[in-house]
Image 1: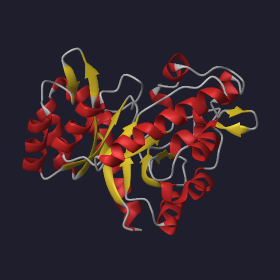
Image 2: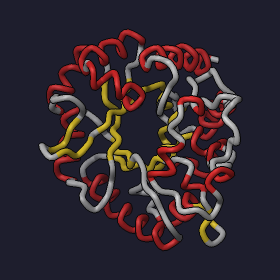
Image 3: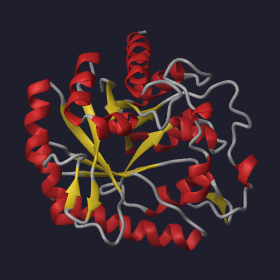
Image 4: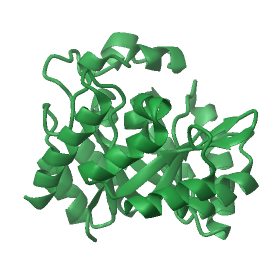
Length: 282
């Protein structure tokens, strides 16, 4: 299966707040075709950013020659699945990714996995794939297993897939290529950014502690531009990651996702586009 490049729009979140349409126009000019959008729940309903509706978003993307191939959102007991699925259908997306979750113990993971199976079945009935997207905390060990191992064992292959973030796997102290092989056909989407050599220690558990309770507060502490760089500008072995993904043959998209950057956001995604295009052609 061909591995196509895409962009997670979280990478240009600040630019979108300033000029939503203009930012999408610039994203298209850089060359991105496949987008992963962010859908948030607000008091007014579901939001794609700004005041744009899903139907308006689809028209704008069509005009710019881009398409929404997936979305990220918070998935929990409060998710309005009817509206979420409707929004994805309107923008043309066939994938919903759970952007983040936190766990205190093995039972938390088991309970989450049971709920996620139900959510995945709902999505499947409506022609949409449900994905779990990792950060570093999913490689914390509870009772001899990582959170990811527990999820992999206790979620249904037919209903739950994984969107693998290679950078965050490294920050969780694991080998991303070994994990790509472990996820196998259940991983059809990848997130890619890069790690500066100066970002030390690499493993965030060396900072927070292997047995600490990881919450959103700890994650916020990782959101330092000094710990991120654009694709191809850091130390990650991205050619080997690409080769492994192609060898497994299930991954459809590698999305640039720049959580934070020391550069202008649009400058940053342009650098990643240039470098990742070269790496994918190599």
